[in-house]
Picture 1 (cartoon, rainbow, N blue to C red):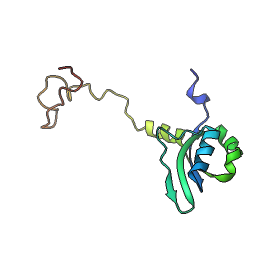
Picture 2: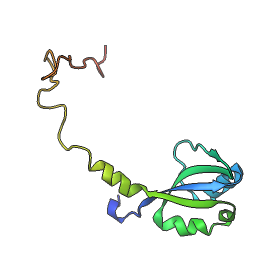
Picture 3: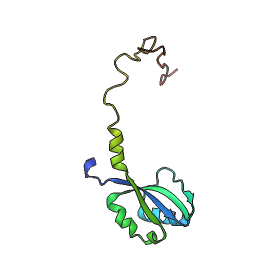
Picture 4: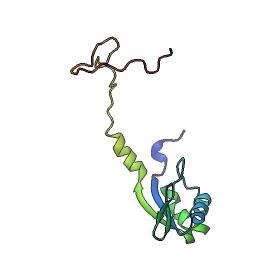
Length: 122
């Protein structure tokens, strides 16, 4: 498995085109990642769909045969945004420490009963 720092950043791009077939051809030719289910949106000049491409493939995508029929707009560096969001996540175990420990009648400092029964076979 390769180190994450060796991979090029993943860029969030919008593909704009006059026809849905143009978007489809471009995505197929460049192997752009459209996610689990691409949802094109109608705009005044045609259609737009979100996609993801590694930064080192952007220039290749812009010179693709089908690129003349679409416009590629870079929205953000998705890798950098992901790293910023990961910094917001705590590092401890939020379920340890007795706040909602098994057997306690309420969550400490509240009147709420802890959630029970999730994931248990009955």
